Image (cartoon, rainbow, N blue to C red):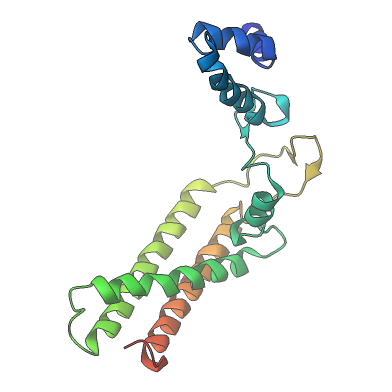
Length: 201
């Protein structure tokens, strides 16, 4: 089965095989269909398995392999290995806590009562942050029950890298604690902003 898959993969990368496949599908039989061949050929060369290995299960596309997207994703707090899990949790919690309050204020059942909508929305946002912190703790306890495998982590090129401290029971507990503190701080800051910003009303 693996030999057949490898042969099919090698055949699909050649232009001649793509042209024959497009003929079988009815693309390119007449001069009107000559333009239909280009997207098929471009797609075959633009979307390939990462590192040319079809058994990894990851596709490399112009979007996922661009330096801009890779730089953006590597700077997200969840993927910054150099930052402690507690600080990552605080940063993610601040952002989520700040933005959770708005829908509760503007769409909640007390939205038409002046002065009460902000308080009720902030309390609802704080309640949701508490529920999500409990969910994070449950996930950490159920996922990271042991110390993990003794095998080292390697990149696709074979380079050894250190294990992310977030991927452990202690790291996840610190992340959940940071999430709770950051989320409640974000909710508090959102409430303060509703009281002091002149253009809010």
